[in-house]
Length: 305
Image (cartoon, rainbow, N blue to C red; front, side, top):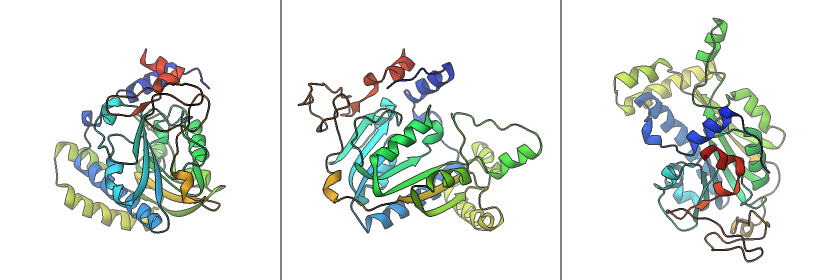
């Protein structure tokens, strides 16, 4: 299934297909906030791993920072990332599989084949977030964990601009999600475990671009600000974090052992094989061993033309 992309969608997708996180390193305060965000993710997965083996899907996996951080907690891992530059930096491990592609197209994964999906700064980067989210719902098993975390459209600085009649441009993103709307989106099928916003020191992002303050003290100051504003303005942080478990009972663990299927005929397919045994489809693999799904999707290929 394809769709006709707008010029803006094509241009944005083109940038994602060539992305390199080293081109725009975050200033120290942003890095401090991200470290707090990553601690929340790790703690949530650690608690979930105490109950069951974790079979992760990491949409927008980048160079594999969460594959590295969460490795002791994971039974298996599938990472999807549009940029071959980022995938080329991935650390290879057993039961770790990487795919060049986008969340809008995940025909290569079976229904209910993962019990944990991480969407960290992902949905606002999708050219069609509804399709990407629908794919995640198809792939996530009942009883599975989902974590959604990204920049928050309800952050205080945006609300202040609106009060002053000034527009806010969400630079470098296709969508802008709010904490309350995202919670509401999950409520029909999920039980929310934890939700909060973090990162209230807005001016410090610009300040630390010019003055490279140490990250450790900034992390402490951000924690103090988070504690205060969690009472004063709980939905007003720069980043929101929501963890939720899908309604229903987890399937038996063996269901997650072989998550891949042929994107042409939908028959079971082992990652890395030269051809589908059922229909003869020949997967394409990149230099670092990732499965390249880009050639299968006309609109994604068009963005590279």
